[in-house]
Image (tube, rainbow over all chains, first blue to last red; front, top):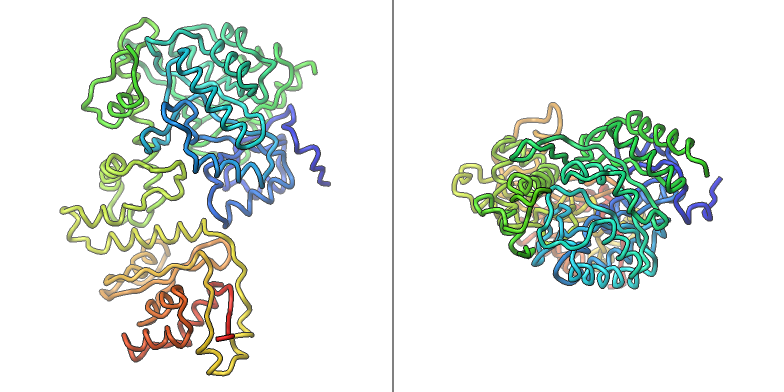
Amino acid sequence: MLDSAAHNRLPAAPGVGYKPQHFAQITTDPGSVKWLEIHAENYMGDGGRPIAQLRHLSERFAMSVHGVGLSIGGEGPLDADHLTRLKHLVGWLNPASFSEHLAWSTHDSHFYNDLLPLPYTDTSLQRICDHIDELQDTIGRRMLLENPSSYLAFAESTWSEPEFLAEISRRTGCGLLLDVNNVFVSATNLDFSPQGYIDAFPLDEVGEVHLGGHDEDEDDHGHPLLIDSHGREVVDPVWALLDYTLAKSGPKPVLIEWDNDVPDWPVLEAEAARAATALERVPA
Amino acid sequence: MSVSQTEFTRAMMDAGQPVPDGLIDHHAKPAGRRFSVYRNNVAVSLTEAMHSAFPVTAKLLGKQNMDGLAGIYLRQHPPSSPLMMFYGEHFPAFLEGMEQLKHLGYLGDVARLELALRRAYHAADAAPIAPEPLGALTPDQLMNTRLTLAPAVQVICSPWPIHAIWRYNTEDGAPKPEPKAQDVLVTRPEFDSIPQVLPSGGAIWIRALMEGATIGEALEQAAAADETFDLGATLALLLQGGAITGLDSKG
């Protein structure tokens, strides 16, 4: 039974990043998975199988569109062509949610296919708010902005990340996407308390939570350097940080991201089932 | 000590450049190796994109050579848009420009074929016509007919056996390529792009149709290039590929 009204918002339940190799299982037996997220840029072709699959999935699942290419933190203006493409996709798909990153990826018309870091200053704050205003005006809806994984810091930064994100949300009205793995990665790499970060985060503005796997390396001084790779299971300390977050925030839509070395469906579904268990423990 | 995105990208794309001052760790020491995460992420993600975009070219080159060439290519031609599905458009010409690959003359055209297959995969949907209305036309009417082709349709002409090379590297038991020129038609009947060898003159005929010629006008061009041109066989390839989406026989 289709209930399109139920697809207008993401449920406070597990979702997964959609991978085409899982299409058959997702459409026959999605298990714990109640909603799906796609990367916007993979669905900007003119037609063919990707668009057909997306149309089909959107009739059955609440969808989240997650942009990875707008470069909201870029020093230059937003790419007008890309804004138009985002408007078109969000327009025809009408997803439950649209999100992007506190990062940049394009400079001088070159796209670097990675989420690059930026300093947290009054100047960058103003620029990001202007870009988010422009995006929200263009697509005609509220967006969620995601906290990054950090491997280094900028000497020039004058804001803490949670305060910076809270101020962006206050000025632009955008919501936030809290990636708990990113918090754990950044906290390990830059030696701060992940619980302290969550305590400082404006949880009322959080419309979605992300979880993913990371790799382990170390820096020049032997300090742990975690890398946000989305290529394996979520580790136990990140599950514990999810519990800590949900206990404070209440139930939220929780997404498992697994983008590299994508496993067979049962492995991914088991991660979603673990998120379902975490959500069941939270009083509504 | 602010770090501009110009400085950041310059250092990121050239490991010979120093890590910009102002990037630090949690003790305010220089970021050092931490910056390499970004250098690595960009190079690895774009190299992987090239492997998945050009699997046959990569197989012909071998993984190490493909990695090395992708590393040079991604610095000469970083993506110009966030649509990675179209990344690599300059790769065929880039391969042809590499002195050390001159003995593998077919590489560029094989990469061109892979690029065409990928474009066809993402091309706009278009419903093909049924063959019956074509069959019902008198010979005169047929010659005065213009055809509309699906957005996925592309033609690649090569002095090399690119279709045979592509098949040999994607299909178990496919015959070994023999030296000969091959023109290839790319269509997408439903969701999967398909390359097919065109008969001699076929590429000229289809390209003339794409430019708005009638079947008869296109036939004259194709027959002028090759008097053995087989109109029926070429038309059948288009029909099989679901490549004809419109028919205008009003002359």
